[in-house]
Length: 179
Image (cartoon, rainbow, N blue to C red; front, side, top):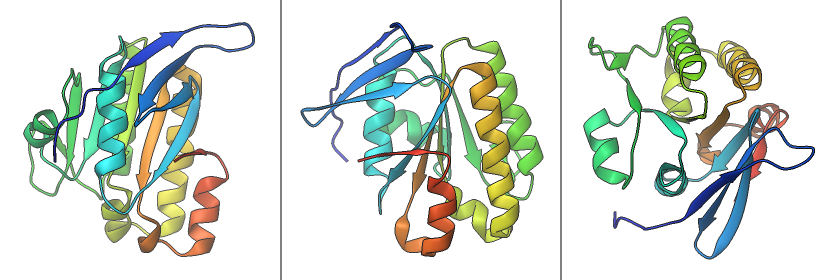
């Protein structure tokens, strides 16, 4: 995948807690703090573009993915503060897909420590292999609460081919779509 240069800015305005404005392919997108966004994409391309654009701002990034942390850092120009590998292989940089509570704790610790945090979750489909949808939905709802409480931003990648329409509708209920 070719590395893309993109721009990002952050700010505050009346009626908003805080936000980041990013530019993707000549399109400006604003991500508000305390919000969750779904990036609907059949491949990882779009979430990597969004992460790269955000990495050009002053925000602290936590990137959670099936990709190894070294690969994430290789694909994204800019700074990734922390990367978590969704894997059954035990390591300091990984979390098992069955341990949703541990993943929530790692995310919570990060967003409390870093005042300007953006969390990227790329691997919902992988988590769904090890957890039924109701458990996965509860995880995302709890994660959404953590994001709102800490004034962070959550960006979740979703491949629409891997979830039925009802499941996608439940995910979309609490999130805005980034297209």
